[in-house]
Length: 116
Image (cartoon, rainbow, N blue to C red):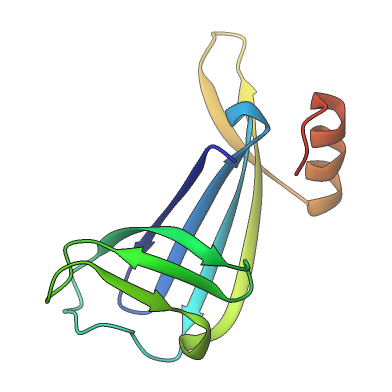
């Protein structure tokens, strides 16, 4: 995986994993029953997934009140949504992301010969 960056919003945390040499990505949206840090509706904080599983991630948040914080997200998760995307190139050469179903994503990854 190339990237484990996440962004915490008031009601959810978005963790995006670039995989397959950057040609695909999986985005996990963790809908929260409450926010793990005090924040205003318009605030967001960037962080990294540092340990734990994708179902129970531990994240390191930067710029939060009180400095950098290590947070076990599991107690705050209400629901997990996964978005699968692959990169596409238009005839004009513009690159963009295309949402696909999990089986399409897995087939794409097999063809790239990268592990998921």
